[in-house]
Length: 267
Image (cartoon, rainbow, N blue to C red; front, side, top):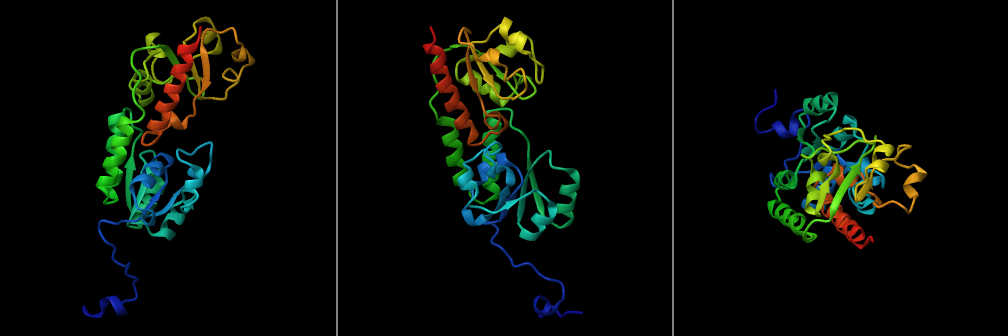
Protein backbone atom coordinates (compact mmCIF):
# COMPACT_ATOMS: atom_id res chain seq x y z
CA UNK A 1 0.00 0.00 0.00
CA UNK A 2 1.27 3.48 -0.81
CA UNK A 3 2.29 5.66 2.10
CA UNK A 4 0.49 8.93 2.56
CA UNK A 5 3.59 11.04 1.89
CA UNK A 6 4.47 9.14 -1.27
CA UNK A 7 0.96 8.58 -2.55
CA UNK A 8 1.10 10.95 -5.51
CA UNK A 9 4.53 9.78 -6.60
CA UNK A 10 4.34 6.04 -6.19
CA UNK A 11 0.72 4.88 -6.55
CA UNK A 12 0.01 3.23 -9.90
CA UNK A 13 -3.36 5.00 -10.38
CA UNK A 14 -2.89 8.30 -12.26
CA UNK A 15 -3.78 11.42 -10.36
CA UNK A 16 -5.06 14.38 -12.41
CA UNK A 17 -3.21 17.64 -12.01
CA UNK A 18 -5.09 20.10 -9.81
CA UNK A 19 -6.74 23.06 -11.52
CA UNK A 20 -7.68 26.47 -10.26
CA UNK A 21 -11.33 26.30 -9.22
CA UNK A 22 -12.13 29.55 -11.04
CA UNK A 23 -10.61 28.52 -14.38
CA UNK A 24 -12.22 25.20 -15.34
CA UNK A 25 -11.83 23.81 -18.83
CA UNK A 26 -14.80 23.03 -21.07
CA UNK A 27 -16.00 20.86 -23.89
CA UNK A 28 -19.29 22.02 -25.41
CA UNK A 29 -21.52 19.59 -27.30
CA UNK A 30 -24.19 22.07 -28.37
CA UNK A 31 -23.95 24.90 -30.93
CA UNK A 32 -26.15 27.27 -28.91
CA UNK A 33 -23.89 26.82 -25.90
CA UNK A 34 -20.80 27.09 -28.11
CA UNK A 35 -21.82 30.62 -29.04
CA UNK A 36 -22.23 31.63 -25.41
CA UNK A 37 -19.09 29.91 -24.18
CA UNK A 38 -16.73 31.67 -26.61
CA UNK A 39 -18.09 35.02 -25.44
CA UNK A 40 -17.76 34.48 -21.69
CA UNK A 41 -14.84 32.06 -21.18
CA UNK A 42 -11.15 32.69 -21.73
CA UNK A 43 -9.88 30.97 -24.91
CA UNK A 44 -7.60 28.66 -22.94
CA UNK A 45 -10.60 27.33 -21.03
CA UNK A 46 -12.23 26.01 -24.21
CA UNK A 47 -10.88 22.60 -25.18
CA UNK A 48 -13.46 21.91 -27.88
CA UNK A 49 -16.74 23.06 -29.36
CA UNK A 50 -19.37 20.99 -31.13
CA UNK A 51 -18.82 20.10 -34.78
CA UNK A 52 -22.03 21.98 -35.62
CA UNK A 53 -20.28 25.31 -35.08
CA UNK A 54 -17.97 24.60 -38.03
CA UNK A 55 -20.97 24.06 -40.32
CA UNK A 56 -22.39 27.32 -41.75
CA UNK A 57 -25.83 25.70 -41.99
CA UNK A 58 -25.89 24.77 -38.32
CA UNK A 59 -23.59 27.20 -36.53
CA UNK A 60 -24.85 29.93 -34.23
CA UNK A 61 -21.50 31.74 -34.37
CA UNK A 62 -18.93 32.76 -36.94
CA UNK A 63 -17.50 29.53 -38.34
CA UNK A 64 -14.06 31.08 -38.74
CA UNK A 65 -13.99 31.81 -35.05
CA UNK A 66 -15.27 28.33 -34.24
CA UNK A 67 -12.36 26.87 -36.18
CA UNK A 68 -9.95 28.53 -33.74
CA UNK A 69 -10.97 25.97 -31.13
CA UNK A 70 -10.86 22.21 -30.93
CA UNK A 71 -13.83 20.21 -32.12
CA UNK A 72 -15.57 16.93 -31.31
CA UNK A 73 -18.19 14.86 -33.06
CA UNK A 74 -20.04 14.55 -29.78
CA UNK A 75 -18.91 11.07 -28.77
CA UNK A 76 -18.09 10.25 -25.18
CA UNK A 77 -14.73 8.82 -26.24
CA UNK A 78 -13.63 12.13 -27.76
CA UNK A 79 -14.62 13.98 -24.61
CA UNK A 80 -12.78 11.48 -22.38
CA UNK A 81 -9.58 12.14 -24.31
CA UNK A 82 -9.78 15.89 -23.68
CA UNK A 83 -10.38 15.53 -19.91
CA UNK A 84 -12.44 18.71 -19.42
CA UNK A 85 -13.56 19.90 -16.03
CA UNK A 86 -17.06 20.63 -17.36
CA UNK A 87 -19.07 19.28 -20.30
CA UNK A 88 -21.78 21.62 -21.58
CA UNK A 89 -24.73 19.95 -23.28
CA UNK A 90 -28.35 20.36 -24.22
CA UNK A 91 -30.90 18.97 -21.81
CA UNK A 92 -31.74 16.60 -24.68
CA UNK A 93 -28.32 14.96 -24.57
CA UNK A 94 -28.44 11.25 -25.32
CA UNK A 95 -28.93 9.52 -21.93
CA UNK A 96 -26.33 6.86 -22.76
CA UNK A 97 -23.75 9.53 -23.60
CA UNK A 98 -24.46 11.41 -20.41
CA UNK A 99 -24.24 8.25 -18.34
CA UNK A 100 -20.89 7.38 -19.92
CA UNK A 101 -19.51 10.84 -19.19
CA UNK A 102 -20.68 10.75 -15.60
CA UNK A 103 -19.27 7.27 -15.06
CA UNK A 104 -15.92 8.81 -16.03
CA UNK A 105 -16.44 11.37 -13.24
CA UNK A 106 -16.93 14.22 -15.69
CA UNK A 107 -19.20 17.05 -14.63
CA UNK A 108 -22.04 17.46 -17.12
CA UNK A 109 -24.04 20.70 -17.08
CA UNK A 110 -27.14 20.83 -19.27
CA UNK A 111 -29.22 23.74 -20.49
CA UNK A 112 -32.65 23.71 -22.14
CA UNK A 113 -34.01 25.78 -25.01
CA UNK A 114 -34.91 29.21 -23.62
CA UNK A 115 -38.50 30.31 -24.14
CA UNK A 116 -37.79 33.97 -23.42
CA UNK A 117 -35.00 36.50 -23.45
CA UNK A 118 -34.90 36.44 -19.65
CA UNK A 119 -34.39 32.67 -19.68
CA UNK A 120 -31.60 33.08 -22.20
CA UNK A 121 -29.89 35.77 -20.13
CA UNK A 122 -30.04 33.42 -17.17
CA UNK A 123 -28.25 30.80 -19.29
CA UNK A 124 -25.56 33.31 -20.25
CA UNK A 125 -24.98 34.14 -16.61
CA UNK A 126 -25.04 30.45 -15.72
CA UNK A 127 -22.36 29.51 -18.25
CA UNK A 128 -20.26 32.48 -17.19
CA UNK A 129 -20.56 31.49 -13.55
CA UNK A 130 -19.36 27.97 -14.38
CA UNK A 131 -16.36 29.52 -16.11
CA UNK A 132 -15.60 31.71 -13.10
CA UNK A 133 -16.18 34.80 -15.24
CA UNK A 134 -19.38 36.36 -13.94
CA UNK A 135 -18.41 39.84 -15.12
CA UNK A 136 -18.00 38.63 -18.70
CA UNK A 137 -21.44 37.04 -18.48
CA UNK A 138 -22.97 40.25 -17.22
CA UNK A 139 -21.36 42.23 -20.04
CA UNK A 140 -22.76 39.83 -22.63
CA UNK A 141 -26.20 39.85 -20.98
CA UNK A 142 -26.26 43.65 -21.09
CA UNK A 143 -25.27 43.67 -24.77
CA UNK A 144 -28.00 41.19 -25.62
CA UNK A 145 -30.64 43.11 -23.68
CA UNK A 146 -29.86 46.47 -25.26
CA UNK A 147 -28.78 45.76 -28.86
CA UNK A 148 -30.24 46.57 -31.27
CA UNK A 149 -32.55 49.35 -30.15
CA UNK A 150 -36.22 48.38 -30.14
CA UNK A 151 -38.37 49.89 -32.91
CA UNK A 152 -41.36 51.95 -31.85
CA UNK A 153 -44.96 51.06 -32.58
CA UNK A 154 -46.53 48.19 -34.46
CA UNK A 155 -46.26 47.33 -38.13
CA UNK A 156 -48.42 44.32 -38.99
CA UNK A 157 -48.55 40.54 -38.70
CA UNK A 158 -45.71 38.07 -39.15
CA UNK A 159 -45.62 34.31 -39.61
CA UNK A 160 -42.52 32.24 -38.93
CA UNK A 161 -42.86 29.19 -41.18
CA UNK A 162 -40.51 26.69 -39.58
CA UNK A 163 -39.05 23.49 -41.06
CA UNK A 164 -41.86 21.03 -41.65
CA UNK A 165 -44.27 23.92 -42.34
CA UNK A 166 -45.07 24.33 -38.66
CA UNK A 167 -45.43 27.42 -36.50
CA UNK A 168 -43.99 28.49 -33.17
CA UNK A 169 -46.16 28.82 -30.10
CA UNK A 170 -46.84 32.15 -28.46
CA UNK A 171 -44.75 31.18 -25.41
CA UNK A 172 -41.51 30.96 -27.37
CA UNK A 173 -38.40 33.03 -27.80
CA UNK A 174 -39.12 33.84 -31.43
CA UNK A 175 -42.66 34.97 -30.56
CA UNK A 176 -41.09 37.40 -28.12
CA UNK A 177 -38.77 38.60 -30.90
CA UNK A 178 -41.76 39.28 -33.16
CA UNK A 179 -43.52 41.27 -30.45
CA UNK A 180 -40.31 43.19 -29.77
CA UNK A 181 -40.09 44.15 -33.45
CA UNK A 182 -43.69 45.40 -33.50
CA UNK A 183 -45.30 42.43 -35.27
CA UNK A 184 -48.38 40.58 -34.17
CA UNK A 185 -48.16 36.80 -34.28
CA UNK A 186 -50.14 35.63 -37.31
CA UNK A 187 -50.32 32.07 -35.97
CA UNK A 188 -51.56 33.03 -32.51
CA UNK A 189 -54.18 35.37 -33.97
CA UNK A 190 -55.63 32.37 -35.82
CA UNK A 191 -55.66 30.14 -32.77
CA UNK A 192 -52.65 28.07 -33.79
CA UNK A 193 -50.21 26.71 -31.24
CA UNK A 194 -46.75 25.20 -31.10
CA UNK A 195 -46.00 22.88 -34.06
CA UNK A 196 -49.36 23.40 -35.78
CA UNK A 197 -49.09 22.85 -39.53
CA UNK A 198 -49.67 25.59 -42.11
CA UNK A 199 -49.96 24.84 -45.81
CA UNK A 200 -48.96 27.00 -48.74
CA UNK A 201 -52.63 27.25 -49.67
CA UNK A 202 -53.47 28.60 -46.19
CA UNK A 203 -50.92 31.38 -46.61
CA UNK A 204 -51.95 32.31 -50.15
CA UNK A 205 -55.58 32.67 -49.06
CA UNK A 206 -54.85 34.54 -45.82
CA UNK A 207 -51.54 36.38 -46.09
CA UNK A 208 -49.47 37.83 -43.24
CA UNK A 209 -47.68 41.13 -43.75
CA UNK A 210 -44.36 39.32 -43.29
CA UNK A 211 -43.71 35.67 -44.11
CA UNK A 212 -40.49 34.33 -42.60
CA UNK A 213 -39.51 31.14 -44.40
CA UNK A 214 -37.21 28.94 -42.30
CA UNK A 215 -37.73 25.56 -43.99
CA UNK A 216 -37.06 23.93 -47.31
CA UNK A 217 -40.10 21.75 -47.90
CA UNK A 218 -41.79 21.74 -51.29
CA UNK A 219 -44.45 24.20 -50.15
CA UNK A 220 -41.91 26.56 -48.63
CA UNK A 221 -39.84 26.63 -51.80
CA UNK A 222 -42.77 26.73 -54.23
CA UNK A 223 -42.38 29.07 -57.24
CA UNK A 224 -45.68 30.70 -56.34
CA UNK A 225 -43.92 32.45 -53.46
CA UNK A 226 -41.73 34.30 -55.95
CA UNK A 227 -44.72 36.20 -57.33
CA UNK A 228 -44.41 39.97 -57.03
CA UNK A 229 -48.18 40.42 -56.76
CA UNK A 230 -48.37 39.35 -53.15
CA UNK A 231 -49.24 41.90 -50.52
CA UNK A 232 -46.82 40.30 -48.09
CA UNK A 233 -43.09 40.63 -47.64
CA UNK A 234 -41.37 37.24 -48.01
CA UNK A 235 -37.94 36.65 -46.49
CA UNK A 236 -35.72 33.84 -45.29
CA UNK A 237 -35.06 33.44 -41.58
CA UNK A 238 -32.27 31.10 -40.53
CA UNK A 239 -33.27 28.41 -38.01
CA UNK A 240 -30.25 29.34 -35.88
CA UNK A 241 -31.95 32.66 -35.20
CA UNK A 242 -34.85 31.04 -33.36
CA UNK A 243 -33.40 27.76 -32.12
CA UNK A 244 -30.79 29.51 -29.97
CA UNK A 245 -30.73 32.32 -27.47
CA UNK A 246 -27.51 33.97 -26.32
CA UNK A 247 -25.77 36.10 -28.97
CA UNK A 248 -28.26 34.83 -31.57
CA UNK A 249 -30.85 37.12 -29.99
CA UNK A 250 -28.99 40.19 -31.25
CA UNK A 251 -28.75 38.73 -34.75
CA UNK A 252 -32.42 37.72 -34.80
CA UNK A 253 -33.59 41.15 -33.70
CA UNK A 254 -31.31 42.95 -36.12
CA UNK A 255 -32.76 40.82 -38.93
CA UNK A 256 -36.32 41.56 -37.83
CA UNK A 257 -35.59 45.28 -37.60
CA UNK A 258 -34.33 45.22 -41.19
CA UNK A 259 -37.39 43.28 -42.35
CA UNK A 260 -39.71 45.63 -40.50
CA UNK A 261 -38.25 48.50 -42.53
CA UNK A 262 -38.98 46.57 -45.72
CA UNK A 263 -42.59 46.00 -44.63
CA UNK A 264 -42.99 49.69 -43.82
CA UNK A 265 -41.71 50.66 -47.27
CA UNK A 266 -44.22 48.50 -49.10
CA UNK A 267 -46.96 50.47 -50.92
